[in-house]
Picture (cartoon, rainbow, N blue to C red):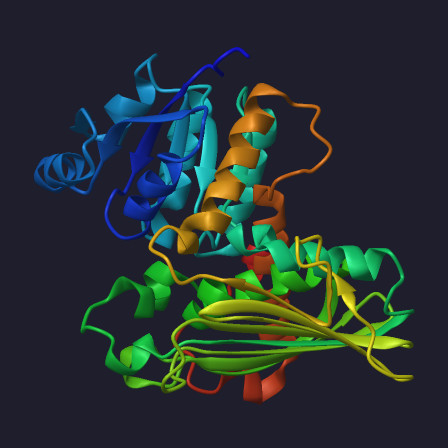
Length: 360
């Protein structure tokens, strides 16, 4: 069996989520992280040494280097556009952290650039790649729940209760027009669309999102095909580390998926319990669970995402399409519309409104 060609990767923004990218890419068979760029030469050098990466420097020089083939964009949200622009104009492949940008206008420009570029561009919606999310998608697509009439979800965190002063993720000018919706709401609405196989439409929102001194939380109502949808997100929910929940109601059964320290999937029927075929050695179980207790397991979904992306770069005709920048643009437009349509309740506590031109 031949060894796959290693694609040489630059990570722009190697601290925080960039370090997670580097760790996950160490498990991707056709990826090799060869350089790191930071906000300064000093931070880039320190990050490169910590990650064991041989080169560091200014992203403009490293993006232009013929040795660079793939660029991972892990900067603050408001800095995504210039990095993506430089990478696309240099003919490189792009892997961008979510949300795709801080504004709809920036996201639309990124999509326009990448559709004209020589390389491919992808977005980091890693939760699509959790094992039981895939199983839930199969249950819905296979009609096991019957016609879908409702979907509800929530994503709860607590870290903004103790957010450090000046954290850019609390600043709408840097994180986006609603930091809580763009940070974790994008993940949740992507899961809804991915599982149901239809876009979310006609949103309205209630939101309080005023930075470190506020209470970043939101609720959004929407339609998804024939289903009524609702999601709630919060980053001030005490004792919630990273709690994701999605429930789908069909005419014949309800499926409930949860992700926290463990992943679980339960299907219940109106006429009594029905076992789920988890595909595991244990055979049929009503509740399917996957544990995430060891040190490498939390990276599993990121590794699966990046492996799919790098395979797609080298073999373009794969049947499963990884997340694209256009998905992120659709989600920013969805939330911008939700805030516009939500009336005065949508604006409670907000410090930055989507400009009218951003929805163009």
